[in-house]
Length: 354
Image (cartoon, rainbow, N blue to C red; front, top):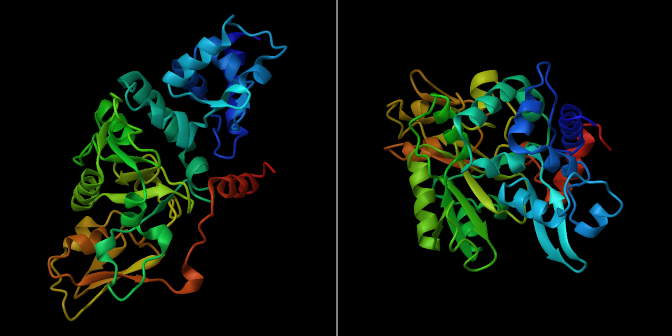
């Protein structure tokens, strides 16, 4: 197999994952893969799945392009292309999907060349990648914007989510960095993505992120909401390991709303914004802050519930506290997959891969 065929085979392999990696007419996906994977790494990746598999099982009987698969796996792990762990049968390895996966891991390797390759690829595939359900991400609201008489659903309580963890860190947003590198950056703060772990001190000593305590993580969350950023997490109830603080001007997912008007690009929260007309002074701040064009200003402020994602950014910015989040009717609350495995199964069915 020649080098181009290897990258094409890898692209097809990645597209067989539930997350997807669609092909394009001009083949930019092959350029993107060639920028990240050496030919030997691409050849090896063809033999990996999304499940952890003992390295000896993967390499048994294969005619690989390298003599030392263990060193290759270490190199690919350091590049964020695969995940490696020590299992019962020794080293185990799995291939990461494109999104959410090895693309996000390039935040500290991102340069202008890769940023432009991604932008070309995104322009071809955003509709296919991000209009499929279940969505990659779901919105979790700014907690203090929820009506105080309403019990917050466990999966929507971002404060509980943070405080249940044992380690926290902040790192650059790969999406805003990518847009900056191609000269299209926005004014939102860059170092805003939160990583979390169930293991104490998990992020200590890492150069690509700053370890935080719980107080520091909560401060980042407050800074994000004050900047008008939308909290999003993996579209599942359990085992959440990050909180993205997103904007429609740079976020690879939310840009689908602003640029191509894909209404369901992100799963909304279980809440919807409501305006107390007796308190509202029609200042227009909420309309300016809403990234989803869900608010109109005329004689009063009006919320279009079908466009509202229940993020609470408008309520956070309201100087009169005239806006709160209310729980949607039960038939409007979107189901959240219980686990990542459930999400994968649903996504696989939606893409016709089952």
